[in-house]
Image (cartoon, rainbow, N blue to C red; front, top):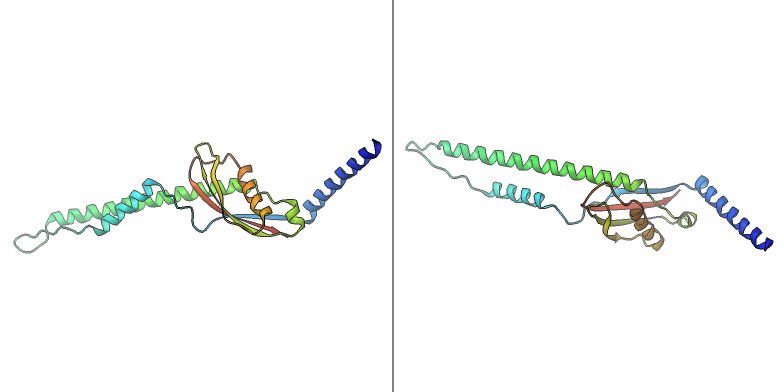
Length: 186
């Protein structure tokens, strides 16, 4: 019994010492960046704004001429209406883009706090990058989580998924996100 306790005690001390030396001797780096293209899931408002802008570009101006061949006041008013509509669509698209970027930044910063790089991968010097995609529900829980591009190491792929799960709930309610997690042992 005493021998068993001694062996277990030594094992715990060895594991603790190894974890401390890993923490001191090996710096685990997990970089998280926004993937180059977010998942194909744009909001209805964005689609309407694009369609409206396209319609405005394609809409021909109706010209009416008076007896001297000059354009009427109606044409000028219609041109102003088209220009105003284009400006409003552009402003709305800019606001939506800014809002989306702020939401993505909040989610990425939150995810950064829960980075997970397995000690066994660090010890073995395993590096790689994993691209993950997920959607958030109204409670900030990751749904439809999937690996878009794996690292070639199941250990790192699993660590990327674990990072997302550890970060739940996210500080956003809804939306689709795609991030690249880069694992490096230095």
